[in-house]
Image 1 (cartoon, one colour):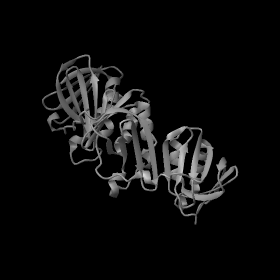
Image 2 (tube, one colour):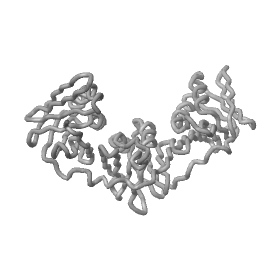
Image 3 (cartoon, one colour):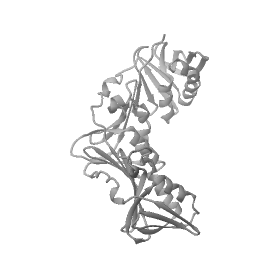
Image 4 (cartoon, one colour):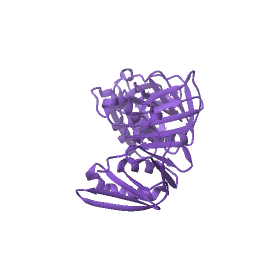
Length: 367
């Protein structure tokens, strides 16, 4: 194998697939990146057997076709520290990779390309097409509510459904629930309902960045593929039955508090400093135009006041500060609404002008 490529372009391609490299594995080759040069392009592949990433890099010309795998971390460090100039990359029959630039030359020991795992193929027969910013919003406003408890693996991902017109993403750890709906075009033989691991969606968010391009979401029997530009991310799906989340969303609320989102977020964030010592509990008391937020722990006490608009009778309720912080951090609107029914009933957070988003949070005991 032999090809030439600008250092910056090659380095960016390496970075785009780096997060699927296994950090710890009994299989050394999972710490490698596959470099496959043929047909006028370079294909970079990484996988940890849970998720896989590919990047197809067009080349002006492949001098010699071939493939090899080398430790991704070492290759990225070498390339990243070379001068910003044209690179010549080649490999031989001993799986030695040579990277040359100006007066610099590095040789890296690799492994045969034939030993590298083959990524699952996901056909595009079942596919959604979602604009990049819309998909980013869909994931960003739900993923934080997924669970980290591996004993209930079906909660460690986000549910993705599609009914022919609307894509819905849902996440819950049983203490809170985030639901986001967006319009999406697609082609499926039947309605879609799959659970995507939160880790895969975290990597998807990183890849999306600020892209405005549409993203294809292809769903297979046990895998999902996200195609954006030159990069492909493939992940296994989680097996299991996702909870019937619709039953958790309050049909109506008796009290509604409307507040400036940033002011409320700042007050909750500050109070959480004290609340950490007491299960993150903060107490909300509301009447007229004022919401008071109190927290007490071994380190001391916190008291905050936020101006609100109250529709309903005065009252009080306790929440986990982190659960409120998380949702207030991802909302983009100027004001938010907190709907309540009673101190033992879940609260419903909505964003002004965003009817397609709902966040349900369970209360804590006031005592």
